[in-house]
Image (cartoon, rainbow, N blue to C red; front, side, top):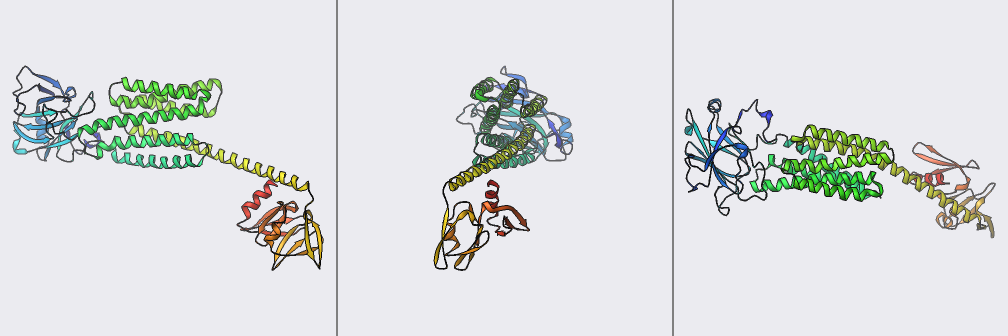
Length: 490
């Protein structure tokens, strides 16, 4: 949508798009206004005017009601299209946008959107003749409709009637940037990186496409840039569509996913290449992969029913129906709203999958810890674990399985058995190194035999272990997660 309809009520604009122009081709000399009565002059509609690889002259009359309505304000002629132009009012040149010529080397390219000031002294009460000299030799591609708009309005910024949604579009750009950051970080953290990476690509392409789309309302660029802009929008749309197709193929196509991806990419590329008009190309670059994805999910449902597939099918159906209803302007803000909603749905879906993956990883980690702990226990029970204690001048050998816990006490360690206590001369650390792995350090002053633990309890921010001899051993907050995991595994 080039001209904002919301502006009409407060700022009148008179379109000349429906007027009949007289067009003259191959005018010599090119520097003089033709009389428009030569055989090379003929009537033409505005949207049939094509200055690409050509130099031409146009003539029409300004509507009297427009001149009357706008007589009390500075008047501007808004000309939007792929061209360099010079404008004449009643035989007098009033402004240039570049320099049109029949020689491509001599042409000075014009801005895509330009406004010419119409001086009041140059206007007549009736029959104001407007003559425009046009050429566009420096584009990269030929457009089916290179001329977009011509009209009269109060003189002002040439962009004020173009893409009124540009500011709102910046909000969507911000959303896509945040989406890129989220999915990008997710792809770096997860073991299965493909799906979040594809969601990152979808956000990336949608953000780039929207940025380039709204650039016309933000930047007054020269007309060759418009060709590059259209090509970029189409390529970014194609990147988005194929990323979505790859994502859904990875989820629902199984062993045939490569066939769906390559076949879909080839079919989409061919359709986009042979279809005329960049607006339609852009639409099809997204619609065709979505239709292929729709068929893919239907085929997968015939093999195996899945509520997840049904939900994805419903989302694609809504997307396709909205496209059909809004096809003429689908590539504008409607598209980006739909993309934002689609990414929001996929965000929730990916978050659920991530949560399930985390739970599965945690369960696997707990099971692995249990198996490792049981294996260590089996290995320990296969051999008689003993500890030599130097007590009262003699060495006493005790079984480690009879020890309940050990407590650091200055230069000694107090060893607590079922019915007695012993002193070990040395640090708690040196003693812990001699004990088997069923002993866990739960505090800087305590090492506990996990086989003697009955329960782990909380007391405010602190915790403690209850042993089978009714002893209560404090657990430091720093050690609590490790103790809880070990106790759970045991």
